[in-house]
Image 1 (cartoon, helix red, strand yellow):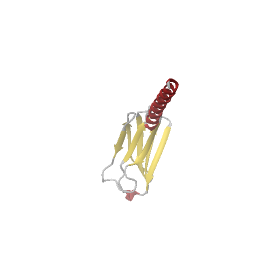
Image 2 (image 1 turned 135 degrees about the vertical axis):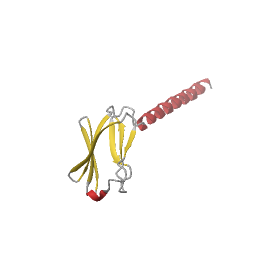
Image 3 (image 1 turned 180 degrees about the vertical axis):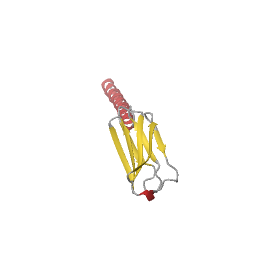
Image 4 (image 1 turned 90 degrees about the vertical axis):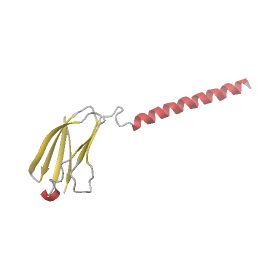
Length: 119
């Protein structure tokens, strides 16, 4: 009876330790900032005429430079600070519409460049 009790306690302890490790690992894998280095550029509402866009930063870079062009004309160019873990929404108001044709937003951070556009 004593040997069976030790085996049961050992199995329960092993189960609890394994569960705790798996929960900790799953939590870290779902954290977008834990040991990851990426940033994203996307429109806030891609199906509308609104040109508001988002820079989502999960990297060590904090300095971003964007250029807004309509066709071949440069409309706006600006530097933006986005800290790690921050999501920064940038908008242009209603004055800029898609009547210009193709609107392109290009964002550069360090040596990485991303681009989105609407027609």
